[in-house]
Image 1 (cartoon, rainbow, N blue to C red):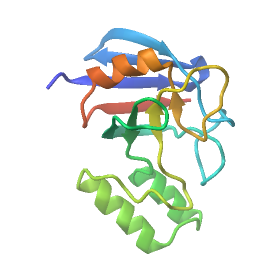
Image 2: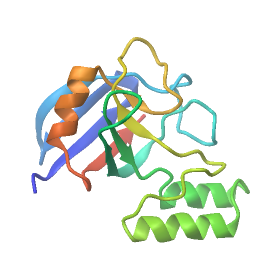
Image 3: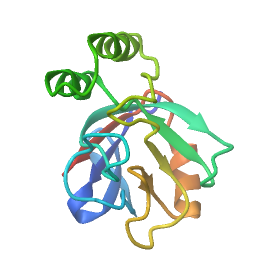
Length: 154
């Protein structure tokens, strides 16, 4: 296994691909249409912030290729439960999926279906995903494996 990791810096609009502490490549990116701040609820247009993992590689994406991350994670679920956005049943389902290394429920009031995908970097146009140019998405898609850590920073 390659031990790559992805680090996204929303304020810089950059995605870094690292091997250990070595930066291998930097990509420009597009974010959700409401780019500032962490994702809170379905439809807010924000890109999440936190520590995630690539759990899906989708070669048939509507946006060229895509890498699905495990949003919402346990921290997102705890926040949602504390704020009364999700029920204890939804909280438990998210935590159980994350603990098992599976994709958490994607249709929740917290949102879901967060991907790194192609489609271009012309403005912040996604619904909360991270967009790359198609050629760069191909490069990233071929480099990473399911299980690759993804850190999304403000």
